[in-house]
Length: 380
Image (cartoon, rainbow, N blue to C red; front, side, top):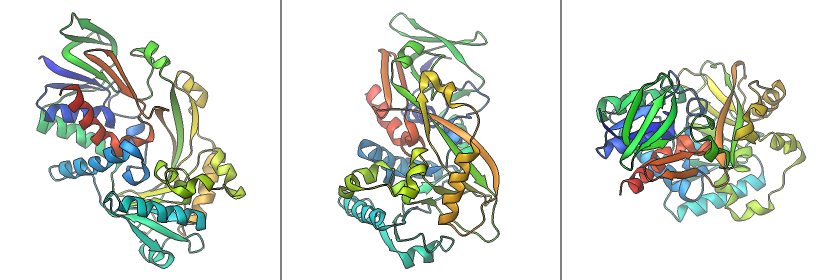
């Protein structure tokens, strides 16, 4: 079979490129080196939160909400529209929440300020002493990260005709004159297409390593925890906290952010890039995290494969300051994603070959909208 486009990498970024290309009528081959996606796409909270992003990534996230909604009407991607809340713990964070509310009002992105009483009424499992107020975004959604990508791939196969092949590690790329591209797999299979897009996540050594070595890519290592279900606990939507207000790009654009000081008790948390988020899964368990450590993508081994109990304990201590229910850890893991100071790495190898990676922590929120624009521009 002849293909119009081969996409390497079936994480959320690569799969949404395949989705939009197939929707545009292209014959698409989607290749994944593992038996199924096991990278950043499945090792995250599953929170789709445009509210925390800035610039074009906010707009891509806003569009992504619409795309998720459209697909959810046809197949269950595990989308749940229970909104996002950022809980302010002090006056400085509450000021930023108010400023963000005012800014989003000017662009028609719905949000609601919640007083302390309103916040505790909506989220009674929060510690009253923690809450100063909150800002709530009703249109935002959550997904089950370990399920969503599999269902999206299946939808692309069944409804859009995408040819998906796992256990397909691409080790070589050759141009066929000026007319197309041929890829060679580790099992010696070959496939040809008019164009090739590489969405390789934090894998920087298999394809175009000389390009990626110069891309200023950084790998972020995140520690995350899954805690046991609590009988009767209902924790709807995406629960973000004061440390998130102090970290996310959207708040950085608010007038008061420049004068935001870090209280001494938060200094050690900031050192490890910790901000506390909660997301309850459909089985009742709760994902809690996360932390951030960094290394150059070419030196990512230095981050290690282990998790540090010290970091996990810092997160649990802060989390217990925020919520009243017990936090009994069932699982702990490390996730990895690549990012770049340029917001994303977009590189044209030749007219027919492109590399797109380094979307950072924006992938689940913004990939759907970003990929739509990316495919539209390439095939305009």
